[in-house]
Image (tube, rainbow, N blue to C red; front, side, top):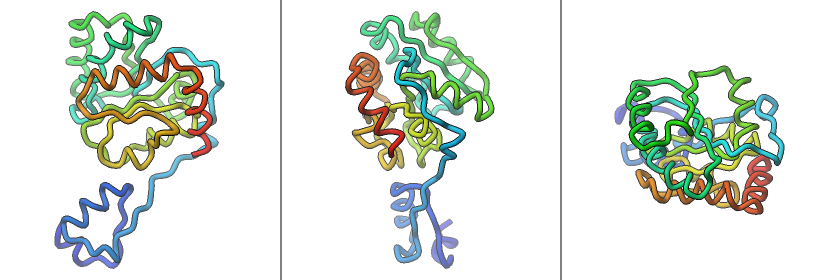
Amino acid sequence: TRWTLGHVTLASAVSGSLRQTALHLGADPERMEVISNGVNTERFPPGSEDREEIILYVGSFIERKGLCHLLRSLPLVLGDCPGARLVLIGEGPQKAELAQLSDTLGVADHVEFLPFAPQSKVARWMQRARLLVLPSTEEGQGVVLLEALSSATPIVASDVGGIPDVVTPDVGILVPPANPEALGRGIATLIRDRARWLSASRAARAR
């Protein structure tokens, strides 16, 4: 990787964080550009402003996505928002472990595991959800964040990697990684605070 970055004519990264990583590995800053991922805004149209109390996650069930922290935040969320439910769309080696953890935490009745789905189905969930959550402990950028913005769906996500390039304070809430309490507070805030949610939803599509 170091050799390649030192010899290419031009290299691109999807986020400022990954650009910095490449520079640390020896990339020439004059040959290193940031080109964000994109999203088809017609495939992810905005949902209505009257949403269900659905907390949505879309992605792999792997350790670096921080799903154990999301599940551990749920009792706190339910204390403030008893009607909320978490919908997890994806697959991965942690699925059985996460299902067991939801049982152990006593929140299984509020958690739904769904398999990977085509974009059209994910778009419908984005339109229904009150918010998208991405609790990763590391992340290059996350195309799912762009899909949420396009759907006018506010976001609660970890303040790591390329996520802050996408999730600005006007469209969501950033929290420290691996911190269930902070994650739960952020989620509960966007469910309870109608005015803040509306402002974030409208800003999300614009962004």
